[in-house]
Length: 182
Image (cartoon, rainbow, N blue to C red; front, side):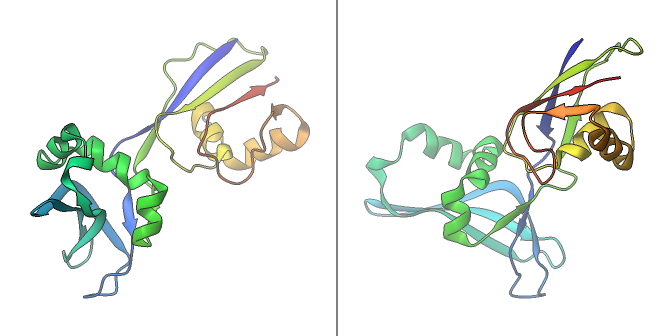
């Protein structure tokens, strides 16, 4: 039997950066942009609010870029405060590295498994797809998808009843498959 599970983001992740006002380390991005033009040059920032004190921080997206080098549809999305563009930019490694930020995906995703009809005693092959690059432990996904505890999933893995071509320890952000032998 074959199933497909999808890891879907439910909201934007928290931005991990130290707040200069209250020393908190979490900011919530709401998809709001600030765009500033200087003649032929343009700056753009993604705004995020501190979860503790509400202080605003700016995540640099564009810095002193020629206006003609930016696609008009991207500028329209920034002016319209598009949350999809905000999500895409937060996942961009260049933007994260330039701004010295990390992302906290806890409580910002869900696992869509559909309604499985699993016959007892039959092997199950599951294909896990990621709708966004969300770092998640495969053992946690498998436990949640099968309705088991993590310890039970670890036991199945140790006994060889749970096999995969990828290493199931650590975190993954890409698609993988696994087979559960009953």
